[in-house]
Image (tube, rainbow over all chains, first blue to last red; front, side, top):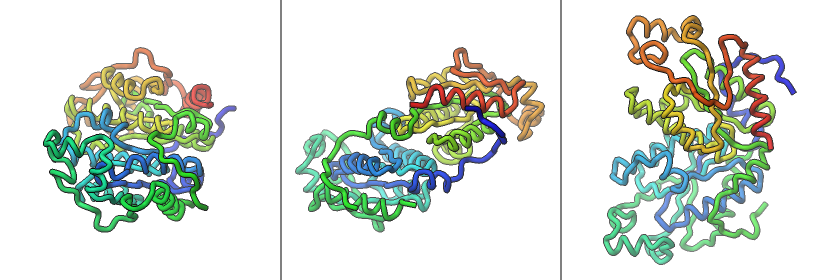
Length: 197
Length: 197
């Protein structure tokens, strides 16, 4: 096959064409919540469910960001802010490309999440993955709460550093009381209602 | 529709499944070349052609990166290296998500391009958009060469700062002698041969 009638273009493929192709809009699902609240489990499970339904979807989390894009960023207050700022910008690029980008980071500060929201504009959906410190500390899948209690981790969110819950999240999933399946059902229903074209 | 039989997963959607869905692999087409060589025009035109053929494709260029992700990066040597490093990491994320990511930046230094290649691994395809300084200076679409000649821009690639051409690019398109249409034909043929599954 050859390409015929090439006209040089100076513009991007319009977002609407991407949406029409994918049969859904692009956007950012910004998960925020304590360590152990279930952000990554919900993120990967939702990704799988949405992918099976035909969505273009991608998860950003510590695994694919900390060692790459943000490997120069430390855990100082400024470093944490820059970490979230960059993730917000990358998530916005994914949304612009027509994908649903799920970002799964504690992102404890309202100001940082506001920066991320500003990058994606109306494509930004804040999802509060709500679980109490007690619940998360009981789960403690990585043993981090234990370490934080022993003082081996400084500035640990929920123990020795604040977590500022969202004031007006687009969605709250409560993993204290709900099963993963119930939370995923709630998330998938939200995505179908808000992203399908 | 409800989601049934949810099993919590701790893994990403495998790359192979994305490829099978999209009917092409993800990857990075890293355009490098002088200002005025045609990187952006070829990038946007190729994006449109590939999109029409059903590819998932997205262009990173100064428009969507400089004011966002890299707005804190200056034009010092360190800043330029960091600029390209971050773009390389983001392009690699897009490739991991199954897209063909076209990046259109001068990226004059071999070391910086090697960093970008390392981020994407074997998914990285370096495309040398080859045009002589004379050709680019004649075109001078933004009047930048004139300014550089008058000394109003410091360290302008090709005039007062070096451009290190790729030693082993995966593809060379020569915009000195070839039309945009011919270059696009060459690029699209390359993509079909190397990315279709």
